[in-house]
Amino acid sequence: MDEVQRRAGGTAMPNPALTRRRILGATAGAAAALGAVGLPVLQTATPAMAKGGWTVEPLIPAQNRGIILYSVRDRITAAPDTSGVPYGFERVLARLAEMGYKEIEFAGYTQHTSILGRQITPKELRKILDDNGLVANGAHTTINKATFQRELDIAEELGMKNIGTGSDPTSSNYQSDWDAAADLWNELGEQAKARKMRLYTHNHDAAYNFLLDAGPLDGNGRPTRSSGVRKLEYFFAKTDPKYVYFEMDIYWAYVARHRYTKFVNSAGKEKVDLFDPILTVARRAKRFPLFHAKDGTKNPGVTNGYDMAPLGKGQINFQQFFQTIGEQDFHHANWEMDTAPGGAGNLGQSLDFAKISYDNMSELTIYRNDG
Image 1: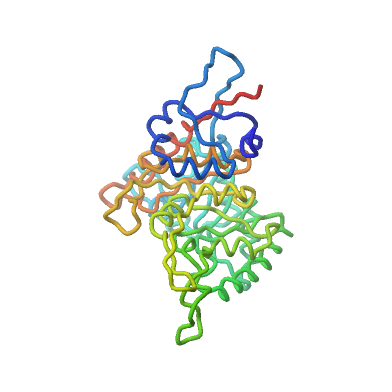
Image 2 (image 1 turned 90 degrees about the vertical axis):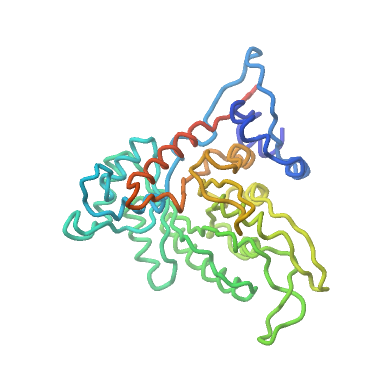
């Protein structure tokens, strides 16, 4: 039994219905890469249940299924209306709880002031969470020294174990800027740990582009070529694992796999290097408490290579991803779809997509044989 299977608690088999629809889309090259580093390659046979010892379990435990409220921001911020579609925190969170979601990742703490005649308070938000059996598992907020303690106060009021941001640590391509970001995040991460929280950063695709750290210098004295190290992977090494954690946005990670395949080395030669989101997490699984489970449909005609879709309606292989990385009890999946709001023409679209996505997330299962 390899290390990832051991962590997962036994021999895991994929849900056979999902196997045919999703798993067979994995390339032979991807399977070979997984096998080469000792990670399990999903099988396509249905286990012989009659032989005994097999049990079926959710791949993402029910208590770890969440949503970032950015996906339904149109309804969180909506003024009261007569459409019948929920609006504001109290009504929207109640609806999400009805769908089955257990965890909420905040993307701001404000709603339309006409609902209460003023802005809602963190204490009132906590009551809404508690009344609906919901847990706040994180927040995308601004991370800087000046306001960090205030952000920790809010997070503590809401009962969070994680606090983070929707932005990359820096948008720079240069090592010195990533060094400075690492120093700041180590400092603030230590402060978060003192308050029994984890500080995390959420990635976009550019964070997995290559660092410019080699070759001739430009007119400003900065490198123009790369050693082949990706920016966020450099950040992994520069930050203290006790203080700094990560939330992989799975969609943007696969966009990075599509977009950033080549770099020019110090000698001026173009090199090919294919980014693998699964291996990136599996090598450091306990640094990723949170994920954005965001799906996409392949579209070679657009820069990103994918169009966003409700979870289960795209082509990202969540079965392979979550099964291979293991640590099911530690990892929390927050559904996100940036383009979920339907506008005035379809006020309920984002909530409809939230329901579709929750149902598909809950259908991801694994077979275990602990014998």
